[in-house]
Amino acid sequence: MGKEKLGSGRFQKDEMLEVEITDIGNDGEGIGKVDGYALFIKDAVIGDRVRAKIMKSKKNYAYAHLEEVLEPSPFRQQARCPIARQCGGCQIQNMTYERQLKFKQDKVRNNIVRIGGFDGEYVDSIMEPIMGMDDPWRYRNKAQYPIGADREGNPVAGFYAGRTHSIIPVSDCRIGVVENEMILEIVLEHMRQFHVSAYNEGTGHGLVRHVLIRKGFESGQIMVCLVINYGKRNPNSGRDFGKGREYIPGQERLIEKLEKVPGMTSISVSINNENTNVIMGTEIHTLWGEPVIRDTLNGLEFEISPLSFYQVNPAQTKKLYGQAIKYADLSGKETVWDLYCGIGTITLSMAKTAGHVYGVEIIPEAIEDAKENAKRNGIENATFMCGKAEVVLPEFYEKAAGGDASDKDALHPDVIVVDPPRKGCDSKCLETMLKMQPERIVYVSCDSATLARDLRILCDGGYKLKAVRPCDMFPWSGHVESCVRLERVSNRKADSYVKLNVKMEEYYRIKDAEGGEADG
Image 1 (tube, helix red, strand yellow):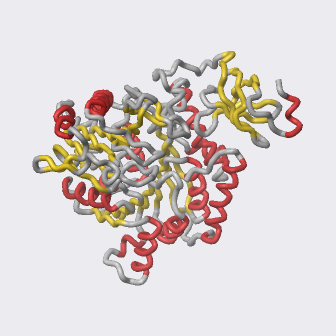
Image 2 (cartoon, helix red, strand yellow; image 1 turned 45 degrees about the horizontal axis):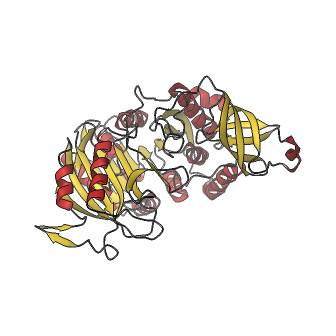
């Protein structure tokens, strides 16, 4: 069907094709080919035979919409969530969990081979099985619900549809905690009763933008933070009541309802008046209870504020961090650097079996949380620095190399741990890591494509890839975390510094050639 279009290398929009799904894309979409022309089809499962409509056609590939499953795959299942196809959160809920784990294991392996240029047989020999979940539901300890209005003007909460800012109403997300539904119902009912407006991205008017909910899985403590567009555009805002300020009409009544939710510990507002996709504002006001909640991870107690970075899947975080500690191979004497340290979860976990640990993080509030978490847990062998890893690390190295540093051991640490954002490590950070020549590097990654790129750079600089283990931190999505161990095998300083940017450019070239978007 439609083969007459193949001469130009593309199909026409709205053209219908029948295709067998033989592969899986980076985000879990099904991939099929018609005479060598690739179709990327969201919601199609490997092994399906489907009818699909061309939505966007390129020279060598096209994006298509799944119209009908003609022959279902043995790996296809009924999605538990009724709006899984519309919602952008769970891309592969219609694929069996066992097949998801294989997809994610293969994704990490193939990116390391293809983008990193490592030998496939060698990678297979050092790669450990993915760490999956026994029960991959209700695992998220954090949810951020956008608030909008339906056609009748009634407030709604939910999640954005994939690649849009259209809100799909969600009453109960199956990967979130059960308390979320109760809290959202209280907030929405209060907005209806007191005529509280939802924020409108188009006009910039309206009060309530998002509802943030966090829960400590060990402590049971719950936090609610309402993100509001507070100020000149909202005539009801700014009225004083009692000892506080009324940020939301009927605020006292809302607090009375929310504080009855079992485990409620903290109720606050975050002021965000900017026209931006950033959810949280930096100005936080506690309305009731504590400014933070507490939770326990790896035997350590952490305070979590509305702005704190804290892994959203506690059960898998224990496994992932446990693997990182295992790969660090600490005996109690080592000097360790933890770059992109957040509130110090990995740093403080390693401090228990290291000589001294250094944590670096760009967010000032996270560094303050990390310092307080160290005090709370009686850890005295941890030093935290605020700034970009690619700035702090080179500055420290230059001072230490010039004799201007109190701790010379930090100049050549035993272990460097990195847990960067999706864009991976900055080239300056990688260059300084190679200059510091740690015995071991432990790389925790949330994007296996940028991980592969950085591994190639580090191995060209004198390291050998020794172990890789994926971890399914986000079941039902296409994302996968990884933990990698590298060991120094050469005393030479990397002769590839000048090649760092070249390799990063090559990564983006590969991603572009595959028809995917380069993360970060």
